[in-house]
Length: 130
View 1 (tube, helix red, strand yellow):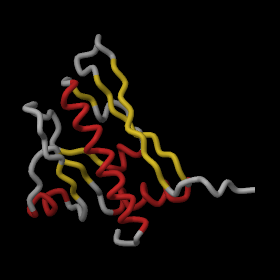
View 2 (cartoon, helix red, strand yellow):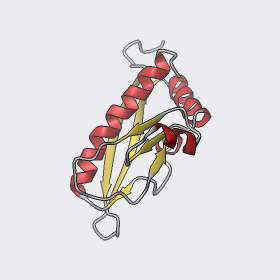
View 3 (cartoon, rainbow, N blue to C red):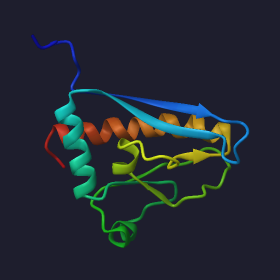
């Protein structure tokens, strides 16, 4: 019998710390929810080339990256990002060594922003907007 208390989706953004590494903080996402919905999220992320960017994302960047959905992480910290963008397909698929950072303050900020981004994206997929 199916458990009716299972949410359609829930994300947990986790951080692993390896102080011996050059980039000691690795962020990854755990998905809790229905596996069919997870597969749908990954399929939409792949189809639309959904990206998260750490730099301002004007309309031209959407054309440049050939994506329909681009989310800009507005930084509060003073740290420069090494990467211009990350693929949501890679983030959801827990692609190894994808979300590596040096600064602890930025990781805290990034974790919060990523959770907001993932929930926003999942809500739009659930509503059929994407």
